[in-house]
Image 1 (cartoon, rainbow, N blue to C red):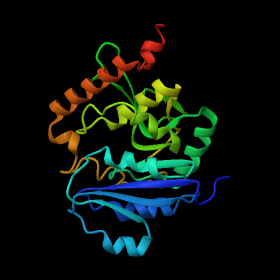
Image 2 (image 1 turned 45 degrees about the vertical axis):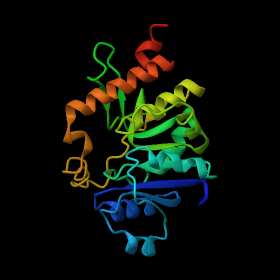
Image 3 (image 1 turned 120 degrees about the vertical axis):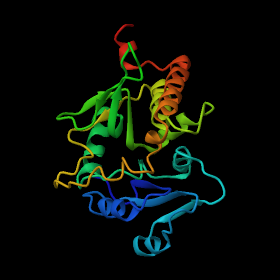
Length: 241
């Protein structure tokens, strides 16, 4: 059994007004965790939420570290596990419990959704979002549950770009360093209570991937090739060796 102090959940704040809903979802979990909020810029005032929920607030006021800043926080943590959530991610009440179970079974990174690379066109990936069974994937995104110590693998190599692809970089770095796989648990981030608004944040005007999809995908392809050249073997490469 885990106890409070075993898990730290890191939330992400930029322009979306989603933090309180996420805090409520994490508070409803069957497993407790410590709470940290990483905020880029000052577009949203969350001071009242800090008093209400008692989280640690890390505020990058003068510089926007994009998607990678929050991944530096686990370097300072001593909890066994860390969870990092995108600001559009609404976990169901049993999600952390499932993450713990799967992490222990597979010694893996657990994600909110996953992707399997297509060997014929790596941009055209196979999506794994709500599987009916635990599913092995090349990398996971939107939420990352992992052993805190693994974060050091991400920072051993220079970051190719801070613009996006932190999901690819973290998972690839861990795979290279310790052969750590990535899994999406059965019926994961979808809200089992039938919430019709579960995707309401992911496609709004603050969605970075939708603001310039061509450049977004080009950058991600560059990052994939960067890590493959570093020794990352996606699943399709493992099957041919």
